[in-house]
Length: 461
Ligand SMILES: Cc1ncc(COP(=O)(O)O)c(C=O)c1O
Image (tube, rainbow, N blue to C red; front, side, top):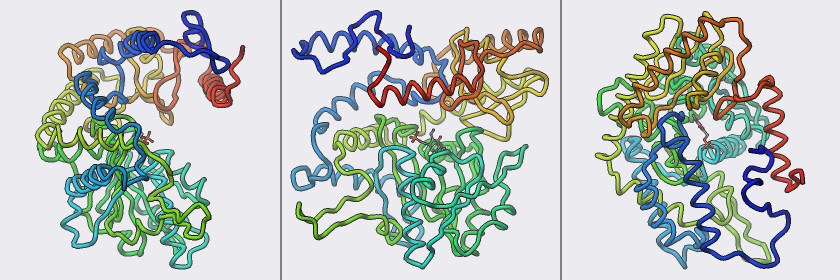
């Protein structure tokens, strides 16, 4: 299959808008066939993260709800009061989940397009709050392990980003370093609950004390863990408190399109106080097209995504989320146990539903090469080379943990026999490069080139 033009061998490639349209049935049949083939990769349960629910009945239900509102614009609230109902209730339910009510403040929130969207809006809010206080060269301090969305947001909004080192054993941020690098221009510090790479939680209580003491904001990135860790806590998995119960936490992001089991394209961003959120609103009163206001960076948004997110939350309820969390936490523990049976492998830090492992004896990508051949798709890391597995519902199917244990044993045996081989795979965000003989850097260059070509509409003829 060509990477540049997948499916060119099976279906005609549209290089121009076709003069005559195709029949709906034909299009639906073609895409249903392709989607079913592509879904097979994660349905096996061998794919880390990304398919958080994996239940086609749930997806069909959400898609039906989405269909009722897919064509409606969330900016036109007079035409669709439902948008206000959905968004308001999503935010209210999320604020309650993260105990914002107990703060005694005036907690508010917004629904954004995803984790990156929530982080970007948060950084913009802190920049604007800082500007209102006279800070014109703002900085933010994040743990090195915090998601690149912070780097992207700071780049876009002209904020200096200070990357704090983490303890190599616990992978938690070095709070002393953060304290030394917070100054009068720091508009926020960041902690993850949990981080993408290791699934570990930063010392949020310590960061909260620091933030209060130094008069700066504290954003908790719960994009990944937000909708599962509270239920892990309820089930007794020893999750440290990371939400608004911690004094000093001023905002928190939690993605509904991850462990909220909603459709892709939504996240929640919550603020302890209204004033912080309102600072990033954009209004233009004097425009000839009319007075303009939008609650975030986006203009038009589909009410369909708000409806589907709301539906996922009210359908599952706390009981449903708790049940899924229980299954995922238990599966994650069993998978970690399988890793621990190999003295050559080492689990990094103290993770929960997402764990990362490496080896001090051979390159872990040798293990990955064999696991890939057996259908596994982990997320690849570097410094040190490591593989991470974000356990989701597809892994909770019967037989998946057993297959993981058996395949891992074979992969470790291979790595021990061939420790000097050059691995064929390498670290790349969202997956691991593989099936290629090239170096990982070449792979990244190729992927980037493909993405850019695709976005410019100039794939090779
Ligand atoms: C901890 C964390 N924060 C932020 C993000 C960014 O989320 P998104 O890909 O939805 O923009 C991710 C994505 O995996 C994440 O794991």
